[in-house]
View 1 (tube, rainbow, N blue to C red):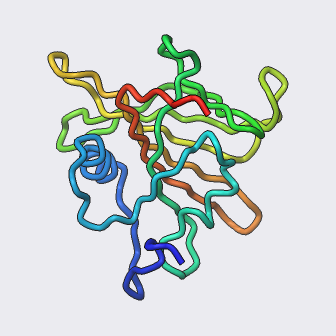
View 2 (view 1 turned 180 degrees about the vertical axis):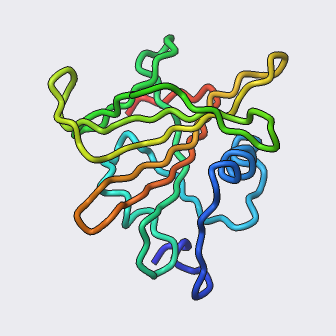
Length: 176
C-alpha cells in the first residue's frame, strides 16, 4: 500500500486550476514543501493514460480524478520542441492556449492535447484529452518551462480525469 492511500476518511482533493498552478506547481518548481503531499511523481512518457488510475489513487474511495507531477521531455536534446510520445501513441496539440488568471493577473497558460493511438501521421484519435498548464514568465525573470496537466477520457460510465503537474526546469532525461 502506498503513502497516498493514507488519507483521512472522507478526504476529497479537488483544487481549482488557479490553486494547482499558483500553489502546487509554484511550490514544486521552487522545491518548497507542499503541506499535504498527495501528488505523486510519474514519468508520463513511460505510461499510457489508461494506466494512471491505479498508480495515482489518493485514498481507497472511488475516484474520477488523479493527480501527479512529471517532467517535460524534449524531442531533440538541443531543441525546444516537446516530445509527447508514449509506447502506444502520442499527444497532439489542438486549439489555442487559454490564459489562467489569479486576481486579474496572468499566472499561466493552458494547452489542450488529444491522445492518438499509433504513430503520426496515421494515429487513431482517442477519447483522452489533456490540458497542459505552464507558469507565465516574468519578462526579467528566468523562463519557466514547467507545466501542469489535466487528462480526461469520456467513457460510457462517465468522465475520468487525470490531473498532472510537470516539473521540467531544463530537465534532460538521462540515457537508459
